View (spheres, rainbow, N blue to C red):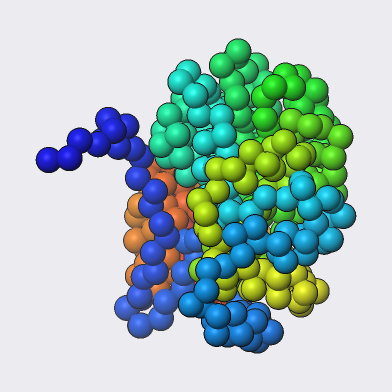
Length: 353
Ligand code: PMP
């Protein structure tokens, strides 16, 4: 019997969202915050072209995509690092700081992968409870110790959709020691409409210990291809690049991401439509008597407590997959207008309680 690391025995499981089929055969997957749109033809075409070279290894340095991102954001290419999805970049970040005794601070509940990746990297998790479903940045700053190496600030927060605003973020960053890396996880940034929410790419510019994490999985609709990136100062981006598994970002993913940046206007129109649907869904739920925290992401959060799993089952019966967190609540992605209608009807039938 091979011997594995002890940490594997207690590793928290990552539970991916699964599709369900309703009694009438319909299926709406609102459990993984994906784009409800089919891929753009221009992106599919770029992938098809790249596929003709799939017997070759991809460009390990992702030069074309790195340059496209640097151009898109007006940052030096040295400030960009890529990974196979931003979850992998988060893992690489933990690898860069993972020494015995190192601590990572994050809000809880937040992105489910943080505790998993921290355990894997041998970094101790310090969880700071949300207050009113939002990050308590004061408490997070107070939790910093001499062992803290990394802090994740997830804004909008998965799964609650809440954001960290400019003034609180500035006060927080001013308190964090310069040898602690603060990662602004902005996986849902493109959906933000609140003008008080800072753009991490502006925030990092004059703070050497701040970096931004973004992804092509959500607004750009490339979840299945796995491309995420970090924008940070040269030493941070270089450290992340060193921890990348060679050739981690495959050739089709690189081509699709470059094509998506070229088609950004079209993709951002789709984001705008999702933002409109988000308002319709939240207003509908509020009208039914649900307490739905304001959300700046492509999902809503319903705090259901003990009713959570029953709610998920009720939705599944209508073919709607939501993401339940037993005993806490359910996260529901904004889908197509049809999917959202079915969700609203299921929520009404279940009752706000
Ligand atoms: N950060 C947050 C906050 C997320 O919700 C997700 C996806 N669920 C990710 C990062 C990772 O996304 P990906 O690996 O697809 O880029």
